[in-house]
Length: 102
Image 1 (cartoon, rainbow, N blue to C red):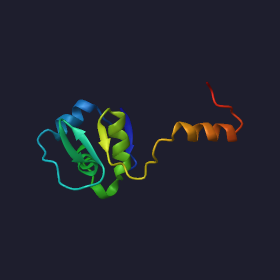
Image 2: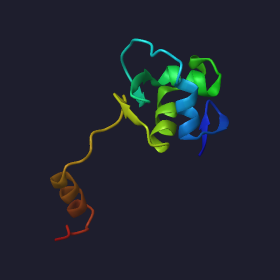
Image 3: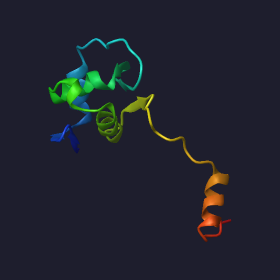
Image 4: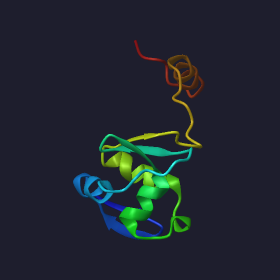
């Protein structure tokens, strides 16, 4: 899968990400994380390994989006809005002139 991280294009494959992280110990810390091979890694650590760039050059969001698209489970994503409830969607639809279905 092609993705852009820190303005550079990368062709990432889930199995290659797993292979790259296989011998690496997860760093401690909090914040955004990703589950790879049964271990939880900070997304910035994974981004640094798979892109070979300094982790200050990219955002956790960029890496989280790429890893999510590859099928990895990401946690603790900052700045992401919670899913809208069904009643909120119905209210918004009504206000916009689209009657709720069913």
